Length: 260
Image 1 (cartoon, helix red, strand yellow):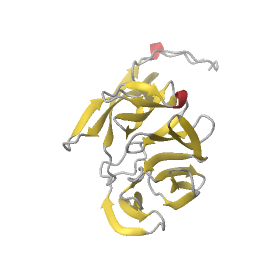
Image 2 (cartoon, one colour):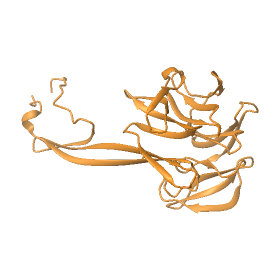
Image 3 (cartoon, one colour):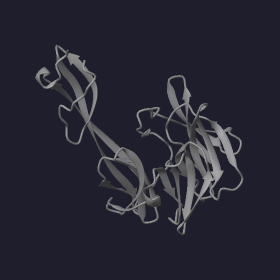
């Protein structure tokens, strides 16, 4: 080869993966992704809206929604109106993941990745760092006093929590066997995914002691592909559904560079 590259085309709105050369031709597949968000209405039913292709996480924030989205290959935080349209950027367009809000929508929490990983809190136009850590999957307790998160580090996945005002330091809960997002079952207990043999079992843990409470619920997946477990017992008033469509394609050798 001449150690050079050239474009041979694009597949609009789709991503390419798994290239395989067969008799000089290239066999590959492309896939597209679509997202919709469901919000629990006062009557108890979920109201679903289409929100495009680039949303990664979404949460309720007062009457609006907050979400992390992929923009130009980077994560950003946005505020969405009730129709699912972007109404503003969070923190001036900084690289943001996993934004969540207090019940009244006044306090915003997120993982800021532009200057390294930090968990930050913003309220009344003022923001502060609560802890510097490689966190993800933020979850606020029902009373708004505790913020749980997954820490990604050399020791693997670990569930930890901090006070929502940043006081008191970081509290370890336990290691995780799966990448599914933990969530609060009460103001002091957490649902976490644990592995029993080949099965994932959701287990309720006391966040102060790290001990199981005795409550369990069956799971269906370890969430390693980025999709959350539909059997998760964690209750959300906002849900994100992702759909994928894959197509197998063949690119003729006449469109490929000639081997030297």
